[in-house]
Image 1: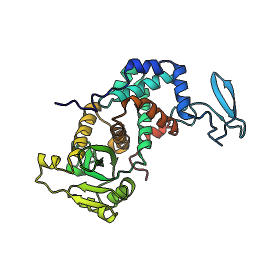
Image 2 (image 1 turned 60 degrees about the horizontal axis):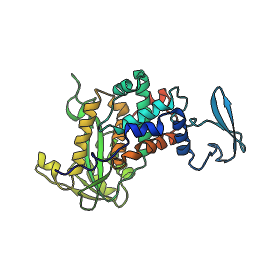
Image 3 (image 1 turned 90 degrees about the vertical axis):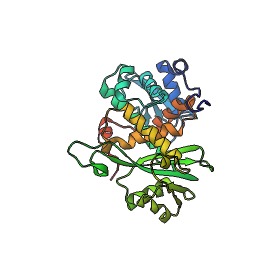
Image 4 (image 1 turned 120 degrees about the horizontal axis):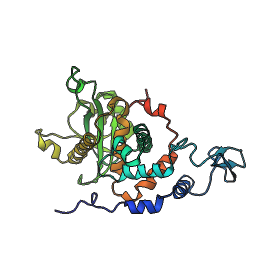
Length: 320
């Protein structure tokens, strides 16, 4: 059997990682290059000229034009951190180099920090991934399916009405022959009704995208949003998952549920599903570029606004 070129590609080994990011100075230099690739720019006015000074051991940059003061970490997801950057970088490497997801509990053991710290660190990383995936639109041929996270609670509602289930849409863009997946979007929806699917299609499907889906009634809204739509007919069972036009979305959905079920004992779907699903999509969409995973994610994190503990805890899957 031929080797899977995704699974067997050369990634960033621990030896290579330590050589590139093994000290605090190397981490700071890497962050500076990623945040300001053309040299320091004032976050307030984009001015290029600055003076530097130290206060309580921290290096500050002061813009000569507007006098705004900033540090390397201020205004980023790293702001106000008490952890060494080497710990942050190691966490990012661990979270991106594993074949499957890594729970905060396992991350805690690798880093030697408290569970609370590991949870906060992981959710900040996932927040940056989520923000990076927010503007993504799929084009060309797009396979789409509906699914749920979570199971039924004892004494609660059964089936799709369970309070512990979170509905989400999973979509995979493929090549013209429907043979190879390229990008994916995995996002929670309030429910599978016309309004939710219309909103999802307008945000996530490019105007020229052609949708392939099963016969779920709400998916017929794709035609109303101006997208070509093919409804796949099958006899159900295993054949339904392998039909041309649905195979890759079902493969990704199966891998997603296996990965989440194996890595996480439990999490609050109604609050954090958007982050966990965005993490899966972020990893999938960059699966062919494993050696670049760490610098690309670091770039996303320096562009991500600060995410303090209350913000992380108060998250919901929907803004309104």
